[in-house]
Amino acid sequence: MAASTLNPYDLYDVRSMLTEEEAMVQDTVARFTDERVLPIIGECFDKGVFPRDLIPEMAELGLLGSSLPTEYGCAGMNAVSYGLICQELERGDSGIRSFASVQSSLCMYPIYAYGSEEQRRRWLPDMAAGKVIGCFGLTEPHGGSDPANMKTNAKRDGGDWIINGAKMWITNGNLAHIAIVWAQTEEGIQGFIVEKDMPGFAAQEIHKKMSLRASVTSGLFFDNVRVPDANRLPNVKGLKGPLGCLTQARYGITWGPIGAAIACLSEATEYSKTRVLFNRPIAATQAVQLKLADMARRITQAQLLSLQLGRLKDAGRMQPTQVSLAKWNNVRMALDIARESRDILGGAGITTEYGAIRHALNLESVITYEGTETVHQLVVGRELTGINAF
Image 1 (spheres, one colour):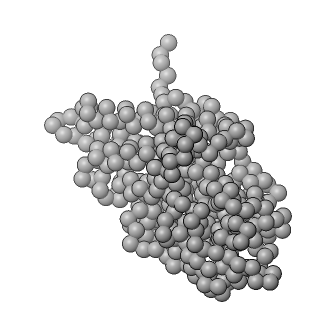
Image 2 (tube, rainbow, N blue to C red):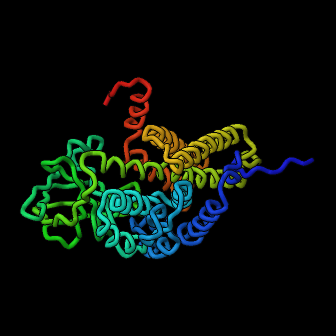
Image 3 (cartoon, rainbow, N blue to C red):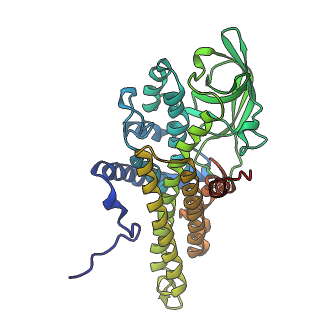
């Protein structure tokens, strides 16, 4: 009996481990990426523009807040489906996946998990529909790896709060209608829904970026911003709130770079078959085949890691250390593959006619945000030793 041909980008047939619904979600988002993202994303990256016209289409597909309950206008998908959404969006570009991650995991999730029922009803349906865009204000200008040291503060003033401070490197900042802002209070760190038209609140877009150019990145500034207590997230205090949001987002990030890596491997493989040097395609050389095989090996490891992580999440058993391990492994994997793919492409690889350099530059941000690689290594080290080395 003849051996069946393996999918070169799914050597362990992870696809067969998906439910029918999960496979349908992957196919739908893959089609969206192929038809709507890939034809325009190189030019968007070149111009430094986020393709905001795609937002209504993403909402129509149920990609915003996909894991939240249907009673709030969301799709009610499971965690593996959300992961596959992230994978297929980042196969297009990290900036597109970042938009969906921030909207879903960092803005809609805290309103659902920590907000009042009135806040859920007010905001979540419009956010799922893409009518209200959110951003997440945690990182500050002096450094992001130590959120407990935040300077932004909120002080009670009658039935309101007065917020002062600044946040930096905020995805969606200048697109956003609301910001989920974390601030120090006398009762510990608390979250607030700050609306863009509140006096004293300003967003300033960051330019001259060499990474995530097809994404909006901003600084947020708060000068005596008066926020009603009704906009405070009432059901969490302390770092548990923002860190809980980051765990949700990091989970999606473990999947996203798999898509970027697959895009780079596919591109490098096809290019190697057509690039002829010394009278044969470079795909016929051992050096290139070893590189391609190593990429496939590392992608396979990442696929299995994220799928198991998703199954643990859906079973309610996922631990933050497991997320750190997968984020560390999978983003490093994708960044290395993007760089190696760029090398296989030779001089052509430095242009945005191809995807490798764009993915490599984007992944320099992905390996830094939501916890740097070093932070995640230390999280795993702490789990092994029981000693905090931060």
